Length: 319
Image 1 (cartoon, rainbow, N blue to C red):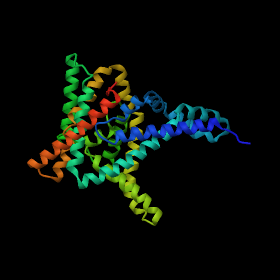
Image 2: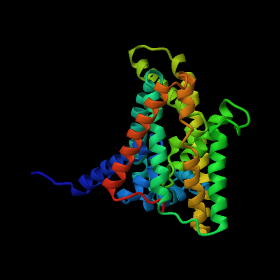
Image 3: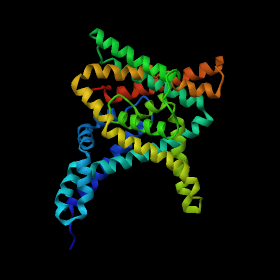
Image 4: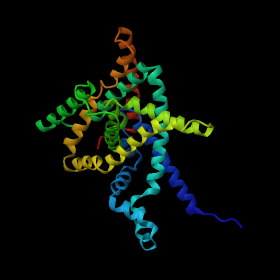
């Protein structure tokens, strides 16, 4: 006699769907100019994502950790359901899969073809600012001031006029906090923030090195080769967790209080970030006529790609 377990099949289908969502969201966030939050909106799971993330509180985390005690297991089970881990875990695994694959490609291209990859990124960012800016209105002096402030801040950071204090672990944690927070916001790409902070190439390389070293352990590789990049990845993840429970909530509160003004500031940050990838080209090549022409050509390809994606999905909206 054969038994049909439809409940298990449905659960597996939900896990697979969430993993697919994560692949799409991770791929978007790994590329500057395309937002994982926008992908979540387009695919219809943004509300569930935000609800699950904002459900993560110290109280619920402690309740789960205390689940080993028989009298507290009911509360631990309730907290687990509130955290929606059956959705967040496969989503997160899918995002990590996509980010690892794209980071490896970007790390390689940044060394071999910097003009192509960073010219392409410049076009993606510029086109993203245009598509998102179309739906915004500068209806008051306050909105104009927010736009100027956002664009100026991004330009100052991109030009290395305004720099992060300190370096090393502190910067990595800070970059993780800001970038992961941006990943859940429609219109803002986490990788765009990393480019703006000058950490994108470094972190992509460290992630690729960590994965390669980890796989190398299966063939008798050295544990020491995993430690260095692994420390960087761990610091970034710590920053990401801090960002999700702090910065992301602050931005969400700002959107709830004054959505229009906040969106103007966020989109202006994108607009001011357009020159940021060009510094990576300047580090490898002098700005000759040929370099400028090739960069412009690849930027045009990046812009066309984003405009085509916008047309395919029916338009991007920072809301």
